[in-house]
Length: 397
Ligand SMILES: O=C(O)CCC(=O)C(=O)O
Image 1: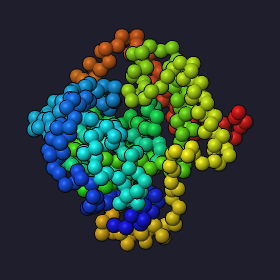
Image 2: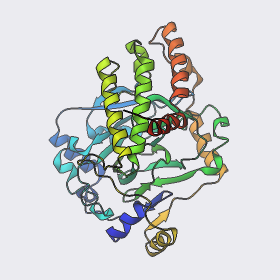
Image 3: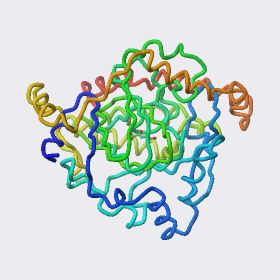
Image 4: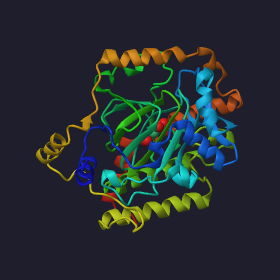
């Protein structure tokens, strides 16, 4: 595996690819998951605040705000799998530095052609059925390395006709309405059935996800994986769009109760509705627009890579040269897709729909539904793009 060639493939891939037998010199590859968990528990004495939900679910995706906490040891994750019929758990989307040094020794992305990437790495630890609702990342491209266990990745191209949502709002993730985890029916997938790619990621495999590809990720057995998002030069445009979206949401939610806001803003998103918070978003927007207009590079500490600089011929020759270990992810047939969806629909339990939002008053439920619809329309990425173009063409000072 020539890191320079791999780097060029990653920074020019227009569809997802998988690297087989990456043979990374990471210490964790020399241990079993059980050994790794025991090492973690031996060093880190405190119980881990796993988050999760019940395995049975309602007709809408299981959003992060529905998760509850369960404290346990790392080793429990593997043991619980045997009888984890009721609840799934995850300790994920966290920076690698939250792991003890011994549990992350040797981890960097040098073998992929990015020796400088040794800090900006995220880990994902989860039990079977843990999943992330379908979304795309607004920034960069993604390299995912599976270390233990298996994960199923369903991917769709940026132009797939999924219904975009901005509630729950999280900067850098755009979710969709379709529920891949526990669908109540097939209807909402009718327009996308011909555009589905699928891969089960196994230990030692690495996945390359190009910018803005939709993905629904589900853990099949206790799993650990690492990933890094590589910022690309186009990200400044996406940052402007995310900033406009933030300002619209801050304005719409200003004055709403905590209960309502908790259902609109994702728990990991720190979005202040105060006058100071709004002022801050305006300053960031101003700064980004000036950067874009003067074509200046981003602030010095954020690395951004050029993307899509090779011609098709050169790229295809690279893929051919590396064909023994890097392969395009397979497009699956509508019937193969519907058999996954039909299996997942067994988790759907209509009684759960009735229980949702029992914690907030009827007035608040009504208001929340109204606000969600309004935000999803006003913050639709296409509309935000139009606002961005108008701002960039106008006299934004
Ligand atoms: O592994 C997961 O649950 C989600 C991963 C993901 O969304 C990503 O790497 O972009």
